[in-house]
Length: 218
Image 1: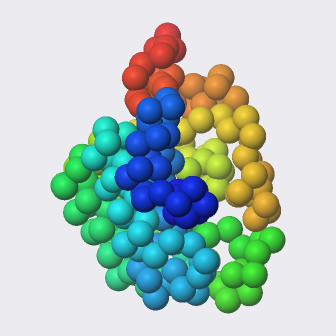
Image 2: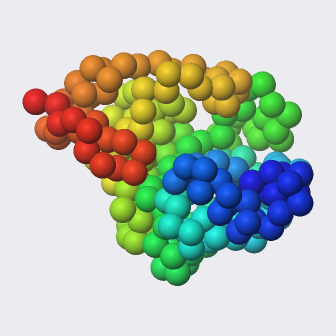
């Protein structure tokens, strides 16, 4: 969004207003990484700063647009910085109520230079992921939905996450380029997701981007 605004010589509110008036009603939360500038300077020095990312979301929310918030962790950040990230999301949500979901996933170390900075032994385990899911559900009690990232963790862990605070397994990902570029290429279908959800004694419900019900799977 910052890039579009700069290229168009517009402010962020002006850019978002034009996009909204042209039909855009939601934004993904990508690029959140870890909302601590010490970390961002290491892993994404050319991306927005913490305050810039949060301000884009704030301005979108003020215009009535729904967004998500993400967290990519397990690299150079500390546990305290993960908590700081969630705190920034929680505080903005208290202010605007514009985040519809929180999605976190662990760093994938193939196909990128950052992988060289993270020893294999320090990579988050499935237990770390499930613990983070549970903590995010408790701490982000003002965000309606917590999504399970089966795309990075695999279908089994993605399924188990539904018992650790997640209420959403996301989409079947018809085309996905970011995670697959880092060496992770899980695939699934709507039928398989429905089966995994039923296996936990839950009812599969297909939704749209804004969490409106499309179909309840009998």
